[in-house]
Length: 135
Image (cartoon, rainbow, N blue to C red; front, side, top):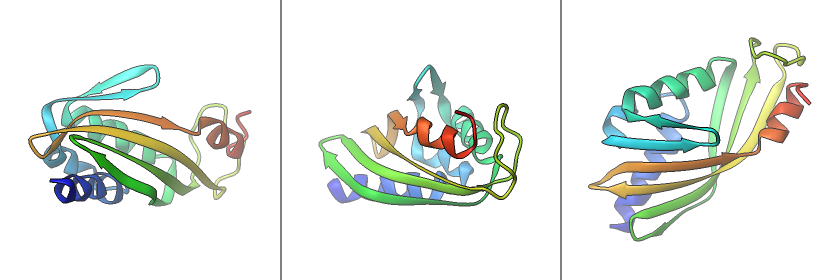
């Protein structure tokens, strides 16, 4: 079971988060809820939209797995790094297009029936904002 959850997480992070947003429909349950600070995302379609919006200001996106995944029962946790070249378009950003941005975060996921049912994320928004000249 742990190997299946590890592989699910690797597809989640290294394939879907890296740009194959349509995978959301294969990787999450119909009742999926993702908990971002300040708002929840529900279902595969909304998840794919949020991921596409998050990638839109960047090119050359890479996502790396730094620690984990660590599996305990139906829960998996990991640390990752997102990197990309800023193409522009974020309100308040003063960094020029082409600025390389990298920041890290942590995921916790609850798996149900071989798919992600619930997701919690926290990322280093201070480093992200600072690298784009937002504060």
